[in-house]
Image (tube, rainbow, N blue to C red; front, side):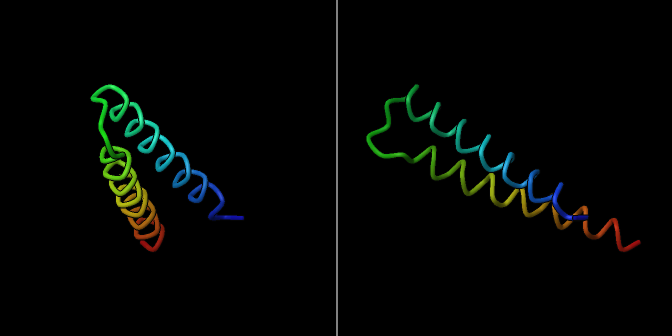
Length: 60
């Protein structure tokens, strides 16, 4: 139960980055979903960074 908030935070972060990537693909009319893929990866890395940072702060 303690980590439910972290899972929700990860999901929301990744969703927002994928949404932004899709918008960028539509704006620039990309032939392939390059922005979606790139923003999704960036969202995953950011979400992992935030979770690790939270876990490290709880250990102190």
